[in-house]
Image (cartoon, rainbow, N blue to C red; front, top):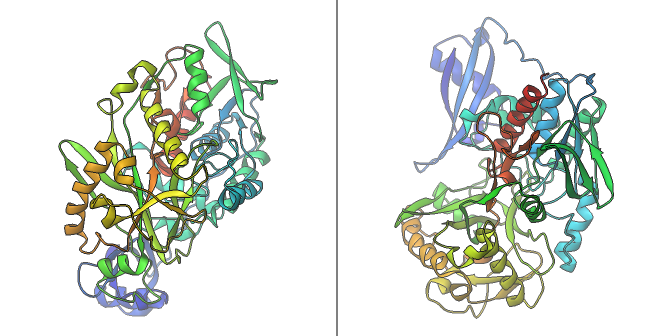
Length: 515
C-alpha cells in the first residue's frame, strides 16, 4: 500500500523512524511491517517548522521485489550510428542504441572528464579559455561541471524513472530516485560519466575524444560520414547530432552546407547571488537551518507585458562559474557540489528573448539571436578589461542605476569587476528584471537586498538556434540519416529532457535502419 508520511528533519536519518511512523498511521504492529520504501521525498516549509513529506510503499508481512537493472549487452550489428557530442543527449542515445543492438560511435570535441578538469582550473585561475575543453565542452557536456540537476517537468516525453535508474546503476546516489528535486553534484558526476563510458565501450561502442567535427560528408542526400579535425573521416550509417547549445561552429557549418536551421527564442540576463543564510531564513523562517535541512532553494517566475522573467538553474550552496567557450567573451553559470555547502546561493535571473529583440540583426539570419547573445558576451569581456573577471553590481545599485562602490563577498573565483549593468545589459533585459524584482521580493520577502550581487551575462540558458527535424521521423528534412538531438538542436532543456531526446533519437535511428 502507498501512504504519505510526515517526518521532522532530525528524524529522517534513522530509517527506523519511517517504520514507526508507518505503523502508527496504519495502526499496525511494527513487526508486521517488513519494508517501507520511499518513492518521493520533498520539504514542506510553509509552516514555522519545516518537515519532510514522504510518499512510501509499505509492505505488510511481505518483502518488496527489487526492480532489475537495465541490461546492456555487447552489440552484434555491424551498423554504426555516429553521435556528435557526449552530453546527456549523446550518452543516453548511445546507451539506448546498445539496448537496440546498434553500435554507437561518439565523437567528442573535448577531453575525457578527468583531463577536462585541468582546462577548467586554468580557466578559473588564469582566465584562459580552451575552445574545445571548458564548462560546456568535453565528456559529459555542460551538465557535468555545472551541477547535475535532474528535475524536469517534461515527464510525458519519456520514462524519468528509467533515466534515473540508469544513472544510479552508474554510481549516482539512490536518493535521486525519490527526491522531488534530484541532484547529483559536480564532484560526483565525473564518476557517473566514466562509468557510462565504460558501459558503452564494454558493449562494443567507441568514443573519440579531441575530435572536433569540421565537416559532414553527404552523398546523394544521405549522411555517410563526418570529418574531424579537418583530416580524418569517420563513416557511419546514421548520425545523431547532439553537439550542445554552445556549438556555434556546428550551426555555421550546417548553414554553409544548406542544411536548414532557424533562430529560436531563448533567454538571457544575469546570475544573482545571495548569502545562503539569507535564502534559508526566507524559506525556512530560521537563522540557522541546522544539520538536517538541505540548503534552501527557490523558483521564481512572472509574466510582464507577455514576456517571461524567471529564475533559472538555481544552485543552493553553490558557486558561480565562468562558462565562456571562446576567448574574448564572458558567460556566467552556476553549479553546486553534492553537499551544497557553499555559503552562497545563486540562480540565473533571465528574460525571454525573441524576434522583437534581435530585429536589428535580421541581416544575419538565421543567426540573429545568436549574434545578439554573442555581442553581449564580447562587450562583457571588454568591460572586464579583457579578463574573465565578470561585470558585477549590487542588486540595489542596479535598480537605482548606480555603479557599486563596493561589492559583497562572492563565490566567483576569477573575481568581479564593478560595472553599470543597468547600462550594459540590453534595455529590455534590465527594465524587465527591475520590474520582476518588485514581484519577486513580495514572494520572497528580503530577496531584494544590498547583500545580493548580480553578475553578467547569463546568456546560455538554451540554444538560440533550432536545427530542423521532422516531428514523426526526427530526421532532418534535407539530409537522410541526420537526427538533430537535444538542447543544442533546440529540442530539450536540461539533463533529463536531453536524455529523453537522446533515447527518442536512438529509437528513430533504429526504425530508419530497420533494426
